Image 1: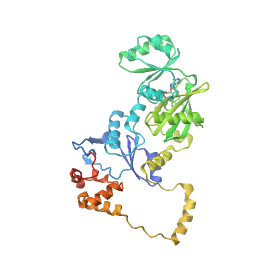
Image 2: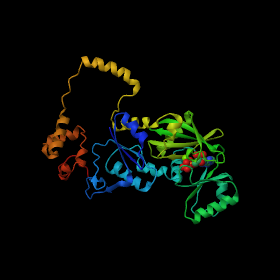
Image 3: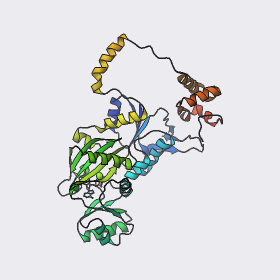
Image 4: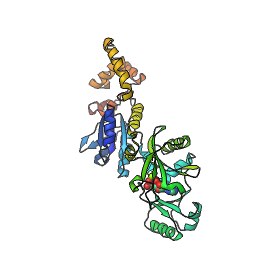
Length: 376
Ligand SMILES: Nc1ncnc2c1ncn2[C@@H]1O[C@H](COP(=O)(O)OP(=O)(O)O)[C@@H](O)[C@H]1O
Ligand SMILES: [Mg+2]
């Protein structure tokens, strides 16, 4: 499989994991790409790197690991995913939802997923009322876009609450106010891949802090989620429109709450738990893209026996099918070289002709009115 990774960093662990499974991986920095929307109604949208067109005709999937300059990064994700038709487990819409703590909370609540009481006000002039709505002090205030604990504050006194809310409002910074969960200094990060939790880690806040983020000095250890929490994490990722996400959960009393969904979960959890969630991610993407990776290590023994037997019973290389022969002809001479009935056969047999869209030598094919593959 050919994988494209969008990231500002090298993503060595992900790249190594995908390469071990036999995949070809390309990492591009989204900030280096130009996006082009064509004036054609039939989709010639493209991306360029340093003035050179980046062809994605052989790319099977896109993995997004974008932590900064999100606004441009999401335009790039949208372009590659929706305009150029490359599958990703992290579509731009989902990443946008996850990046906005209030919007994400709205989506979670729409799907009946428990979150702490949360309020938002454009003009937080009635602070007492707002604090009362989230269960009184202490309360938690959060900027909508923060991550790694930055922008998460605890308001312990009325004075702190009044002055913080006022200064944020005067500085045009949007804040949400949330019920303080007693268990919050210990939270859970669950990595969701598809409909499974790949690994979960309990994080404990550093002394003197209430935020359990590892980047704020918290410590972590691998744990097992309850079946309810597993379901909650999987549903929370889906509610945000993501097939790959880090879901933060806090246990308080006998209840568990989702406090946020992260579209770009960090990889520190791999060192801490010893579970490389990228393996699950890459396998999941293989399935989605319909491409097999190399067999897992466990299969190696069985494989080698099979290949020994296979050496005695070499199957004959199969003949190319009619569909394959016709596709070869299109690749060589363009769609026009086929008769109408051959074109019809390809269409009916569901042939993948997406390469036509990417090959400049075959562009003219798309302008032919009779081209049955064009949907306007
Ligand atoms: N409502 C809350 N009550 C108690 N602690 C909280 C609450 N919300 C967040 N925290 C603590 O603060 C940390 C950071 O909050 P979070 O919403 O996950 O933001 P970030 O995106 O910065 O990680 C959490 O991991 C948790 O330890
Ligand atoms: Mg968090």
